[in-house]
Image (cartoon, rainbow, N blue to C red; front, side, top):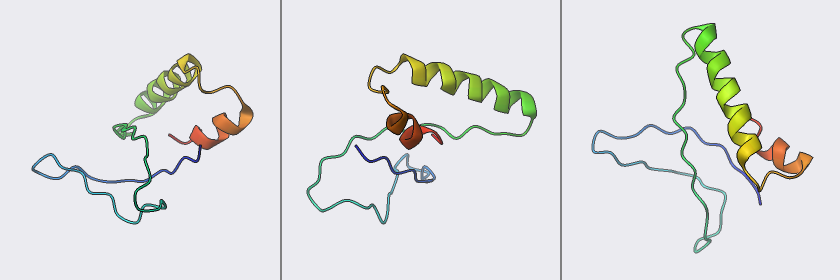
Length: 74
């Protein structure tokens, strides 16, 4: 599985538009949406990193170094 990280902003009407996706028309994809944290202070960043570390360990699909590398920046 190839992971692609994009940044997007939710529109006023609650929609999300994604442009320039690197997939062929008709491809089936899995979508995971994570809210980008506000890193206005170091405590928030530490809490977010701790949360993500615990979250990634709970997923059964993450079984190899390649999986970890693909999702490392999420």
